[in-house]
Length: 310
Ligand code: BYC
Image (tube, rainbow, N blue to C red; front, side, top):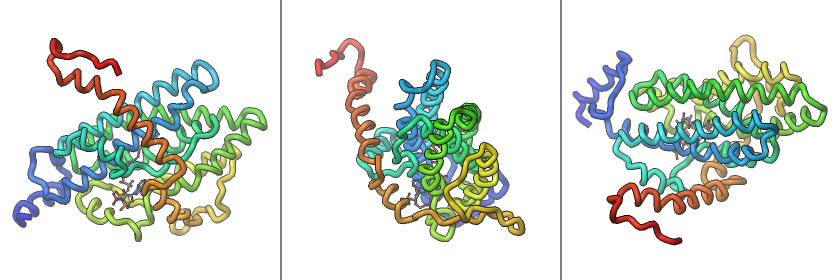
């Protein structure tokens, strides 16, 4: 890298300026941003799947309408993020190829099954809550197109959070069976939720460089701690327990103490070997195949195009 350009770039970041697509940037900054934004986009589009299957089974018309709108928003977020990643030079087709071929990662948490309606409620409230903690922080970061996408995503997610919280309150104040279903969902999703913020700081490969260049505005452990601070009291308030006997806040340090979730399981899941990885990618592959004729039609002058019979 040209040291003079690098110094000017870092000074801009230090002053809090936004970096735009046509500005000079180090190769590593570009590479890291593509990796992170692409993974984020994949997480949104794959994240639509576990909740999406609940649209037809959601309890009641109002819940169906709200969930349909939420799932549609998540797919829209993926589009915003793919567009932001494209500004860095990687075509969308290449990103989708890397997703369906298993080359690119996406959030661990969407590789678990949503067995019951309570699982869908957990995702809508607490997975969205975790995402908002992360996205609100990173929206103040250095890369203009990513920050603008995150601003819009956060605005929409704030509705998801209210919707999800409402769903969980309904379960908490419902019948014994409903409370039990919700508790079981919390028990199932707690470890993946702890994994969601990424490995502990001492194991995190990218945090240092990403924080230096203000792409990541807080470390994985800080984000996890902030989530626990904001949501553990709310979960307890509803009368639920959290499946970690060690979980408590150290009043002196202000940090939460918890049992480390199984990081070997996390590694397996993010590397393709979780309970639903194969199923999630198979759905995307089918969607790619079924949508191919539409993409080809869009690229072909109208008069020449004949829709194939298959
Ligand atoms: N899952 O060095 P580290 C949503 C990987 S969607 C999978 O700490 P980094 C929603 C990491 O990629 C919102 N992989 O990484 C949608 C790296 O692997 P590679 C999802 C993970 O980048 C629908 C390795 O582990 N949010 O909420 O510094 C419905 C080492 O980690 C995970 C985002 O995507 C994980 N959880 O920090 C409802 C936010 N964690 O690439 C809800 C954007 C780590 O070296 N991303 N890895 O092979 C980020 O903020 C950061 O990338 C992370 C990780 C905090 C996730």
